[in-house]
Length: 470
Picture (cartoon, rainbow, N blue to C red):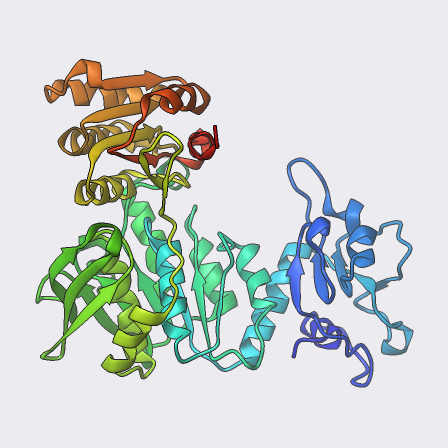
């Protein structure tokens, strides 16, 4: 169990082994979310400074706060050089040179105390879905720690590790990427034994640069794995840039995909619409039928990567088949019937060219008259035109009506019309509010409607409007 005393020890502070034994049950950077047993980390943000809310966090039950300068507080503030006999019973604050680095140091130290397999997951599309699916599958046999939501960066991942407990038997950690060196840092903290790379695409290219730079950044995961039999890189064989990462790791490699060239591969893939998917998985000369409630053929990749890790951790195929059928897997895609009578496929959280094409393929697999509601895809950098045109060509093949939202989607509109798609069946709106107003009166029973766009386009406003009871 992580305690205040162990946190201080991780920071290099001498502590009395009999004192400060209060449990640290997790961490937070938002004082409003502080609960009993938390470590509160005061960070400076763009709009506020966490140091202003230290007392609020401690009042709410946090047992310890990290600060990087002297503060006015109703609670004691100690220095790392203070003698153990000066420490009082928590709660209190500790002054450190840098609160973020201190958090990362604590998380890394605590991770090293718990000897369990850690699985790191990265990729341009599908990281969160892969994390959720893998954690659910492994949860059939193990107690599993996973990141909550999108806590996959230099702050969220170490906060996640503060919740690691001796009773956990595995950890599944999504690792985000914006700039080179970021995943390497996360690996130094989490020390993964297994690394999964889903794919390489143009997500965040505006910040990261070109796709080659993105691939290099993602490959930091497989480079950080233990050499030899201890480490395992699980790579998507159908993505050439991911497949090439086999040359950049000293760990064992297991590939997955849709062709026999992969170590673990799938065929006879059948999408049963809203009922899920069915396919045959092949491994080491044996075939197994997998049935899942996950939606869309693209979900087979997610399941294959999860199966690969389960096999590595000792699952039998019978256990895998049972786990896939029985475990509740959180899906980002949500299906509901609108007050308009239309069936809504809510994939509004975020978007990239690859994920939008996959969502359109799911739409194509469903019944009903197809309507695609597509918002701008942001942060594509030099791939902005190419990405929006790719989506436009796919949408024109799948949908009978297309609603576009945002200024960049005019690129999508142009390529849609170039395909010969009827102009009267393409509508463009400047923002999600205008689109929502139109859709509330235009949609009707018998239509199946995909809503997809970057998070910054607030496509969730369209979803909220379609869920309203009128």
